[in-house]
Length: 443
Image 1 (cartoon, rainbow, N blue to C red):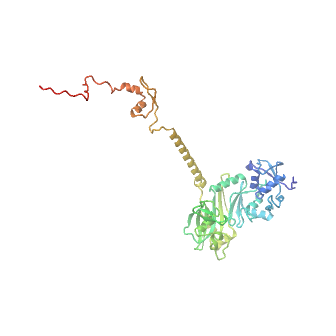
Image 2: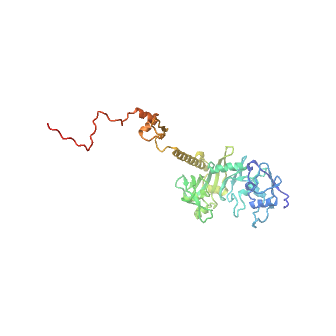
Image 3: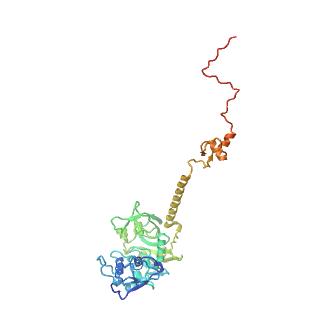
């Protein structure tokens, strides 16, 4: 067994993490530590809970103390021989950098103003990102905040992070159910023909782009809707618009504005060379998450705005726009009854009701009598000369009437006259057909 490092870190499992797997705990709280490294620490006995060895698949409980080696204890190479990503601690400059992003704090949330050029999460060749910097915002117990939504690398503005796992689940549900209201400001090329409208265009990944670019695809695309409103315009050169995504597709705002012929200024990916303005206008992308309104875990609204980055503010000033004009537009309050989540629940409930109705219909058809007439009780045929059998209803109108009135067939036969009685004696007997009539007598 390897000797434990001197500066081991300790964490106490909170109620929000009760019952989850240990590897899931690392993914939530120490995402920079790979699963391979967690497994290696466990094999070497460096990873312990309440001073007992554990495996990545073991589950943690509230109050348990988890001992974790420091990030510097990571081996240079993983079990597969490939170099592991460095998890260097944040510098003082990085700590100040992320703390300067903070707009507001709550009991279980933090609102940030993400600058342009900073990725939200790490990836290939992306070492510096918000998710790594969140280490500087950890609480006194060492619990770091968690991302609940994303912004593109070149998009600036409001970014919400949750301080607890419970809050993260709550906010993620709000974003998925479209009850959160996100307001973006964008500067687009040209002048849309209508001052406001809704862009309804399904989006799908563009083939050959590695999933890094979206395109309008009416056949295979996922539903995507964006509302836009004009704030101000500089003739036919450029228009300052407010954008509200009604769905949450990748690059939705950028792809939609380019699809209607008005790409966002500085967005070379979707607008090409036509996405740039002359006259000293910055070549950076002019897309900013201005405002976010979302209900907190206590039901109270969280509503904050993020100041524009320097290049965007300078462009508005150059074109003669006043920032106050953008904030004067009213914010549409979402109707939970019209959210996508509610609509899907309604569709599922209606389908379930229809299945139950069809099941009940099949069951009733199996139990129903062959005739459409009301089911009547069988009547026994009684009487002196009656055969020992049961008469089923529906065998003639007379039988049905007798059964309905509760009269037996024998009783009806006794009261009815016998039409096959013996012939009247006064009637003359019939003469055989072969008998000859006697010849008439002459007088």
